[in-house]
Image: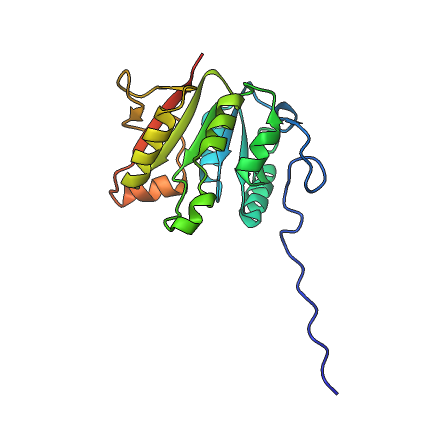
Length: 216
């Protein structure tokens, strides 16, 4: 008599935090109902949440929404925010940013958007997975208030050149770096760092930091 196959293990992240609505819902979501804060900010791909925690501690008036495609880390970080009492001002949702941003509103609701060390995809077949692209830039431009900031940083020179060219070509953004007409920043001005940024600094790797402003 053959033994019965073991029952499948339950997915510990089946109840990962999602934007309101049933699966596949495309209805608009007012970002102001998700977090509280005088200034709302958006982080794409917060991963393990290092920047989220440091940013909320550094800026008590900010509310921050994270969009993280990996259900595990969205669940862990969102629960930790709640446990630390930061849940009212900080949430991380298990969402593909390129799809979720289409639902978020109203236009101009965010003061800042952050993209830390994105796009670790090198093969041609992975091109569709890149975050930076026309849809991303269009939606960031829509969601940022006039004068709002898009902060992007990377330790990969090829990616830095790509982002400088892509965002620089957009009619919706102007450079907002240390030198007029140039988006590059010598330092991170937000008093918060992602785990990757901490590692890059510790390892002595050069980091290209860019800030663009939403054209008024």
